[in-house]
Amino acid sequence: MLKGDFKFLKNMNEQIVLNLIRENNIISSSELVQATGMRPSTIFNILKDLSNKDLVTNLGKGESTDKGGKKPFIWKLNGHSHYVVGLDVESREIKAVVLNLEGEVVTAHSYPMSVAKDLPDLVQNIKLCVDSVILESKIEKEKFIGVGIAFAGVINSIEGKIVTTDVIPMLNFDVMTGLEEVFDFPVMIDNNANVAALGAAWVGKGKGFVNSITVLAQFNQNVGGIGIGLILNGKLHRGKSSCAGELNKHLPKIRDVLISINNKLEEGHVLKHYCDNISAIDLKVIIEAAKQEDQVAKVFIKRLGHIIGTLISTPIALLNPEGLIISGDISELGDLIIEPVRDVIELELLSLTSEALKIVTSVDGYHSVAVGAACLILNEYFKVPQISVPRNWETQA
Image 1 (cartoon, rainbow, N blue to C red):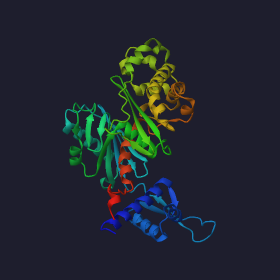
Image 2: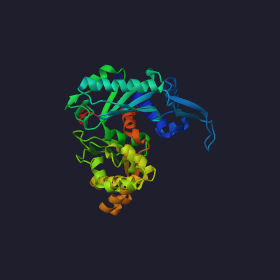
Image 3: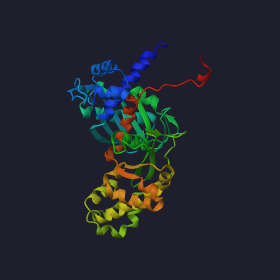
Image 4: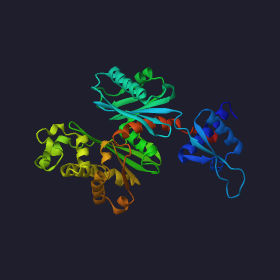
């Protein structure tokens, strides 16, 4: 055995056991032995090490098996041993969350942000938001293991570069160097639709889907865009140039849709109050109006759902996934947005494709992208080390 191999194997075994405890929520030591094929003594030592690190909690003894014998100990992940921060950085706002190791939201907040003038200004804005949300969480800073940050645009997460984005008037620039200089813990970045997909797979309604599409629609008075995040074979798929899911399609602006139904605004018991000031209607207003059974707001949502359904029908036809997750602010509409999207998909696609597709909305709604950004760190933290085989293995003795 080469030097370092034992440590690598030990770390890999620890990660396997830790992930099994996380995935099962509660699991016995005997079930860990059965699931991993490791010796009981190996599992005992791993659980002892994880317990000493405060990563797992012993819940006492469970029931004996049908064959009798000693009652096994029951184990659970200690979600409050460490925490992560997630940010959704937009042009005029940063949404921030704190998650524990189990992916539960501890704190969620939004901070207004002026358009960054340059890179140092952007880094400083991000630093202020991270400091603020950690302070608001009332958790010791030493317990934080990283911050994940999501941006709209094309993000090269491997090199830490932002290729294109609307949060700063720059192209193809290194943001990681500046971020690493101001934080004491690891930082990861990615595209907002990608992290929304990752968050859904980790802690949302995408858990259990092997192949899924997450659609993220950004929709306000000034811009309308749509992107998709792809989970293929259980893993986030970014593509060769980090452009997977970048449809390069645009949604109409809120104002454009409102103008098309302007003569109906008076019929809405909520939206009628905005007849003389439609520029004050944003997506939050429309969502709240729809929840209050405002019929004009429902017409608006139905039109938006049809547009989204039309734009994503082709990717769904190509990939034939089992799950479609609607993420972002509009996910708070639930069935109101699901129904028009489903109507279009059923009309556009083969029945075998549409019938196999389950459509759900994100459980985190307004903060779903920030939650997904935090999951970048969780995904890395729980990653099992990979064994790489040299390409010239067949020539080695």
